Image (tube, rainbow, N blue to C red):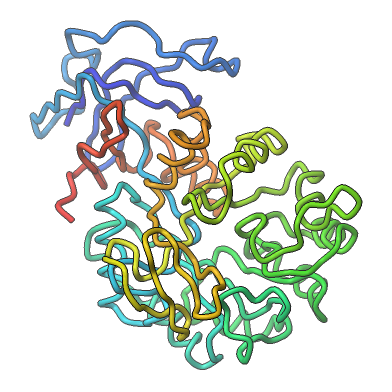
Length: 401
């Protein structure tokens, strides 16, 4: 297949007019960015070509030519922190739930998913991990990992997690979960101030990404955790102390650690647009990762739902426990990316990078996905200038999800 005349978002994080060739589900030819793009400038090089730039239609064994004139071509999005959608949740622990999740995510341009678990009973969590580890791909988004959000968190910053299932860091229990998941666990959330946290980081840091999350840690404790090997912050600003000019806390420690990356939920509920702008200015786009943190109500109407076994009320984009605690989001990652651009004023190039390449790099799958590059999976989305989805392609095939 050849995709002609698109404005292609390149691995250099800028748009280039050109053609893309796909063969056997992978990119075989892509346009190259101009030198000034590579120097960090945002540009769209040249004019839309009238003829295919793919030499002699090489790599077009199926003979299909897709005219994408007037459209933007971006990599499929990568969501490394969300719980569910369309009535299904990762913690349902069923093949059917994962089928619903992967199908819905594909339909909204998210082509790789790393869903998050919750703080649930130990035996139930083991079953959830085994279900994911045994999962067979049935189409839709690729299941590329698991985000283990809990149970190694702080009771004082539990958010929508169930307090009765919180436990101290336990490396042996983690190993049981990882074995059941067939190695799919990519991130593990911990509260570094809790007993056993530093020992856990020392043992697990080379196996998974350690994320500071649901924590009451101060600056020094968070900085020490990062020095031990933590390199990620879960939904920055949420379920942690606020940034204060005399007590910078986790946020300050993460900002001061250049190798540490941070998640942002840009759903219009969790973080004010002004704070989104300020965070990008403080950290730089290369360290930000957009996530949805979506729960099972995403893609459905308002009503009563559950998250981690707890009742949740959804009204519009707001999902809350009955005590008013925000309980994840009801917004998918594509909508979060649009909000970052249209409401928070984040440059489109930065927002795309933070929803594609950055999360892919974070969980070590960038060699396969996260950019439109020769040799990678042909997972991509075609958008119009209003950022509406025109088409979603996974492994080079248009999804019908």
